[in-house]
Length: 59
Image (cartoon, rainbow, N blue to C red; front, side, top):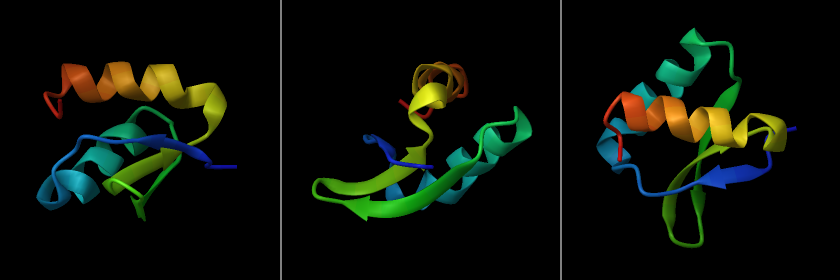
């Protein structure tokens, strides 16, 4: 279940960020949270997803 939010990614890069995660086997969805655009992932994948997005320069 994708319930963990990752914030701080520009809305224009949101779809590309999701594809980065898909390529490494992490299921992710995009959405709008209380603070703006978010990438949603499974709680078990949260830390790995953040690390992958940092390496891909989304933060």
